[in-house]
Image 1 (cartoon, helix red, strand yellow):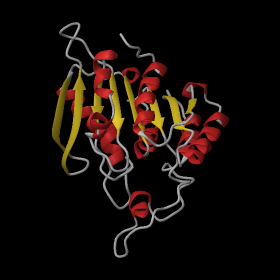
Image 2: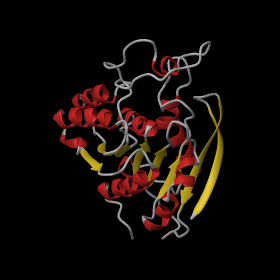
Image 3: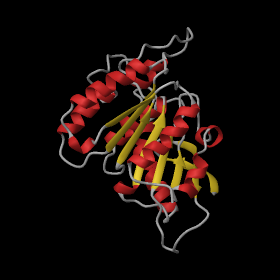
Image 4: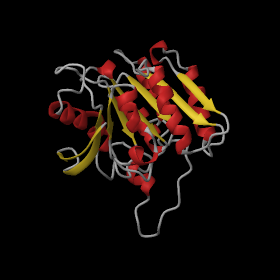
Length: 257
């Protein structure tokens, strides 16, 4: 397995950013193009989180794919009204940068899949639906709708992080809501990403995930091919996410070689 930490300048964010690229050691031909799994970290993570706490590095050889682990800082992977446009960076700019730098990465939408855990599960759902011309499938783990989440306390004298990320108004009927965006996208023309959604039965935010499931199952959109998987006895934990990332790859047809 080849691991590269890539530092690059983002015009969208107006600053240098890091991401990590994992590639299999063996290539079948000089012109081979790898399918790409784009991974989003949790709320306190960065571009190293998946590499340090899971076994995704082994997937490059097991499934013969490339993996990009992105970094969106504490942004929930969205374009923030009082912050930077991380959604545009992850969904548009970064793929274009890496596709240009590494011709071995396939640019076909059917070969690019975006996935994430917790905050990154919410984020990959939003980014994947808003950039469906780039991503053929979404794998959202422990991913509740931020529109339904109870805001966390914040330090006096600092900006409320929820306001920074989503603005001051209710977001249930905006594209910051997973359920609203899924319903809206289902009615629009064009291809839709397939969606795999999973949560552990002991996850403290299980009810938020079940609310998303209820919405998705009520949407009449066969193209979503929506699947929900609930793993009994699992919580908000790496042991669960490590299993589910393999389940997601099975779902999109990338099997172990």
